[in-house]
Image (cartoon, rainbow, N blue to C red; front, side, top):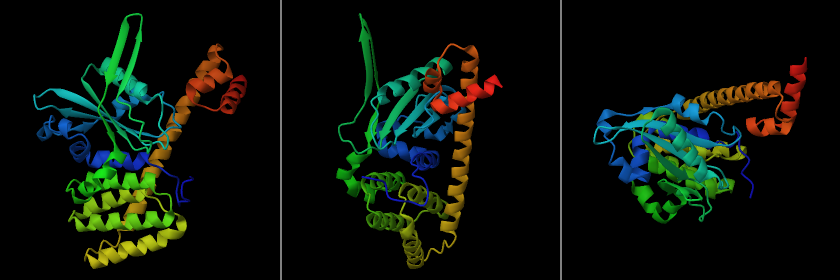
Length: 311
């Protein structure tokens, strides 16, 4: 079934990164409570975007993964890096567990720290539940296991999400709806219901705006239904006596800023791939097809770079 026609390209990556950056502690508390209990939150935590970029630079830029790397401190005082790997593709990926292992051992090898890899699966295929990567040959064997949270499992615990005082419950509900609901009118109704729930929980103005942005980004609507959604939001604000009249305008500005940043990142990745392709062309060892596969570029792009190189 096709995705609903929306006013902007579908993008699950950006709202997930925004949610993890804004509510990492709540994320662990809801989806990985046992790990949440092992962290000394009094010492704070920090995001290691540059370190993660170092080990994922050769990932296929055409795929959407919301990877985050966060440094935390355990209750025993030791430093631990937590790798959050959110799988938000529409279809499961057979190589997912191997990629989890690849990121794990690259971080361990490069920085020499303990790394805890966590997988969050937002797809809708019930039998896709990778929790380990294994291989063995001639007596040599390796098994790498990692905790995994499957979001659709929360459908059976929906009342818990509705009653939860954890702000990340709203993110999970929005993501489940985004994957399950294709009918535009139904998406609008559940989106309005989530926004109402958001306004009823007594969050600060800043939290309302941030969560509104995440929900709005995840649950995108057909263009024709956007005006009705906006009117419904204004009605809720008036009913709840929360005149955040500029909430939607601020959300739109934030989305534009995030989209601009994402475009800049993609542009940088593309230029890096082109530079790698130019270097491989100069070596004269690989064919255009092999260079395209190694860099993630299209065959035509590699051919164009080869022509440029000759001139």
